Length: 330
Image 1 (cartoon, rainbow, N blue to C red):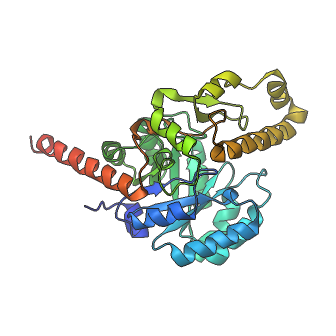
Image 2: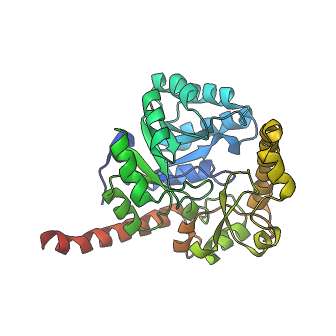
Image 3: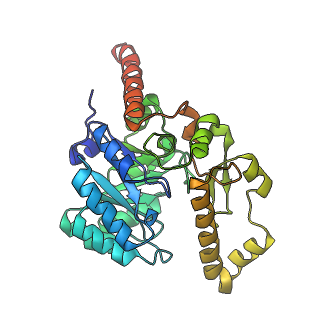
């Protein structure tokens, strides 16, 4: 079966699903597999340590991805490569860009004239209205079920809020790992979902086997928020190591982040330290590391290919939809 929404029509997809951009997880192979499976994927530009590597990845995707794909750009001052990344996106023209953690104005102004659609991460209506005014094509509603830097509001509330506040298509990010979850999210008015955590434990994912095993073995109750990675609350799997080091910043880290004169530099240092910690976690073969994930790992029972995951989700979607038909006819 196929599902018709603004997202599927705009990008010629079978299913309204974006394989979410995941720091140090997403790669070209995953995006190529996503396209083969009837959805589309997005990769963070910062997964590539220099502009040459990023350009090589864009060339690979343009040549080998038989469908739509996107790029995630961090648009605040911590991303010193933003200008070069934007220039490469204009040159190679991914189908869409997702902006995070800052104003999307520079990206929108540069990329939209070249036919590249721009989606913006939002967590509330105030910011959604701002990006609508700037010319965003759609908004990614980062809700409380998201992995990584989750929003504070559940999807059941955030999606209707955003639909009321703006005229933009809403793509929900967080908490969906089943076909029934997809159906319920579309019923709220979203045009699609952005799913990340269930794809960590795929055959195409480049992370360590231990990371994948953690995604399979742990569940929603094992997800915790930590401020140790970037200074901003981030969801991680509560492994024994995470329990040992704690979830909150220590006194020195907290002091630096609350001192107005030092805050900017402290956040940069915390972000750098945290990203290095995540980089080690992504490719280390030890549980004594920090692994980012969201509560939707609850629905991951084994390591599978992307195609197998999408097939399962759509089978569940069909069953959930058909179960509603008697209620509709009653």
